[in-house]
Length: 252
Image (cartoon, rainbow, N blue to C red; front, side, top):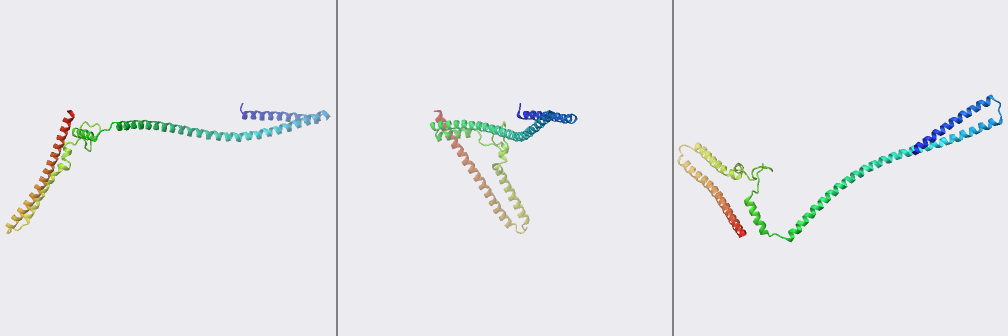
């Protein structure tokens, strides 16, 4: 039985007793008026009055105690609400701590693996010449660049196609030379159209000078490109010779 239920039962019992005492007191007072009063009835009425006053005082104390218990119950409810909120926060923090513990454990495990690899690398160092040799072999046998539209899972190897190479800067250099020649011819035609008919000797000389200068510039650009291509070919041949010599030395 809880305290609230006990106080409730006490108050109800006092109310019933007060009700019975009140009925008895009223009945005795009515009977006292009808009958001749004597000393016995007077004592009975006095006792009933004293009992009624005492029960009334007990009822007031019980009601006051009930009000205090009600205030305490409200405070207890508020405390229970705060405890529930604190429990939720504790559960959330516990979950966060578990996640942090898992992340830290994973990070520590990976760090230990990396430290083990670092110690292994320090114990067995690799010369830079070996790294350069294997890097050259990898770069000569596999592509190191991919087109802009190549994605993971593409069946093509990641190197530029013929169309992409022709649309690049090197492939457009031939078109640049052709456009220069076309522009020169158009300028020469307009110059011949504007020249006077009676000055045929002077335009012919100027035409010869202009054509000669333009052809010299075109030839010089083509020669420079050929020289660059030749140098690149020689570099590739030297690198392939070095690679073959290193491969033969490795096989020996």
